[in-house]
Length: 318
Image (cartoon, rainbow, N blue to C red):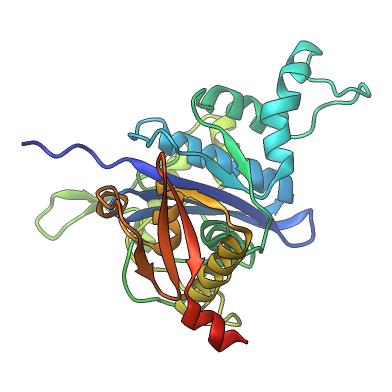
């Protein structure tokens, strides 16, 4: 029996900017049903927070287009600007020739036009409050902030945390892995045997990529020069002044679980897998209540679950 391709079960994006306008960064992630994830990020030396939010969403949509998606998948973001723009304002802007209700020019039109072409009709955006303990939103924020501070974080599937690397003093040429579908510069590096291999992460490759950029069209050069995209399977550490990433993520998840239990909120199976960090496939066969840390996960029927605080945990808190 041939295994079915893994579906994306969670997606999130975020942007950050120091100064607004100023140096900016963006981060995005996709989580798959086996528990693995893909992370994306980039930087712009002179931008705004809104442009970084839109850029993050664009990268996410470009990646999602060719990936199998769980039917409950949504994109989680803390940007009302992004959500309202795509779901409320965009149609009116286009009817009015890219003018706002007051008659002014729509800001960031170039990105809105690309988002309009890239968006997927069966995929909606859901607002989450920033810095509220949502683990994927918090992770995207860490990536975006690191890039905005001139760091080059290593983006994660799994593995030990590694320190973020500083960006070069001059703006780097665009580097891309397998994600964002905009012009990609890859350098061919000669091996000792004379064969050529592609190595987009070496200094020599970056130099060659910069030379290749001179041959691009003016529009493509402008787009490429403003974005650095890196993607890898090594884990990324939070900025050095923050708490250890593993402990920070655990605390965020536990605080979120506490609020979900106290509010009696129902969770879909996808949301539950995201919270407890277990592969979706390992949860699909469960039908009875089961323990998770200080809570019991209780089935509600129709694919919904609820966290109930254990009595022992409540006694300890009194």
